[in-house]
Length: 487
View 1 (cartoon, rainbow, N blue to C red):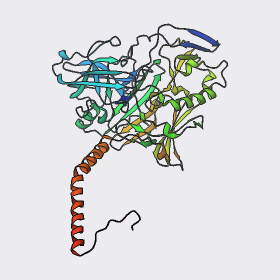
View 2: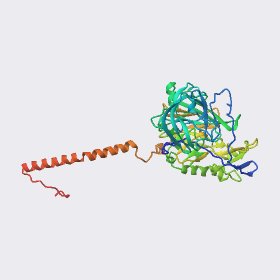
View 3: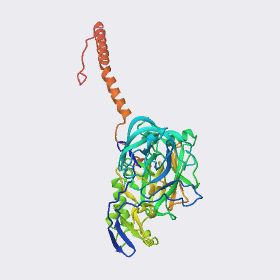
View 4: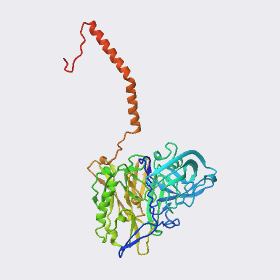
């Protein structure tokens, strides 16, 4: 979820609202197109696909990954969205129509009201509430299972933040402290746990997408704190974190089935590129999105007759076809290049089973599965959301300032590689065209000092002129002023 602070601290939780009604259009025997419009049905919390793995993240495709949390004394149990695109820990404190439960501070003997109002906005949605402290425990994590008194915000009002039937009632932000609100007054949960439990300043996300056992309507994964990487492959590639606020990286290119999208690479990173588990889709700046959609439609529509309708490409309609259909072969692989240095990069290649998400409200049957496009337009730069991260182990090494990717044993097939480029990739980095606050302050102070010292300068010049004039008179030398021609 991408947090927005003047939208430079922007965070993007993709909230997909389905309108009432269902219009089905059959266009060939093995493909159906219909509008994604009714609210998704209630779902029970999915069971782990295998008891051999300690999965601790669950959810619905398109609604994010959540983990369980206990808050207060006695403890009240909730689920919170796991979000690398923000830094606050916040929990619902009033009932809202999208929720089935909320935290009641009056029933917790350990709650401390810090009497500070907090507002946090995202690229889609926002909330406001009151800052406090209470005992927090994440029972499903191998670390962080000791109850500690933590900063948290009680959400008292929101706009487009919660998702119907998503089964989470709050959010835990895993980004850097600079994003936490109010600035300087909050210690993010991840920083507190790492400090108190003396852990390596890192964590790993393994997002698996839907499981075969639970079907396309639910997904699962794992969050590991510290240096442990679970069952991740030891073969890995890394890229640096450009700035420690979001997990910001630099995209140098994007290609579809090996064909690069022809667009200046700085466009990908305007105004930033972030790795964000709280966002479901791959989100691209307007100019990049249009270029990618043009090429994607060109490559994918060649073998389809009739072609997919425009509503599918805009994310408003879903497409259904048999699991065994060869239509999957019409969609190209998508490769993202991330800079590791001025002349090197890594690549992440995902197939259509990654960027086509299972439709949460579909007419899927034993014969047909339904899908929606997991690529959308963004007004706040590029966001590498869950459709890119699923099938990978992603280690956020905050201490070393790098993000490491390795192939997971779960989820869709993802291919990683390293490349070398003779071109200077520093041209891909976006720098905001504005004067920073400290720079502006230095300009103002310099101007004030110059203004205040002007009388002293004029007095010194007057003294020097008088001294020279007297010296010339004493020596009998006439004092003349040269004209512009020195005559």
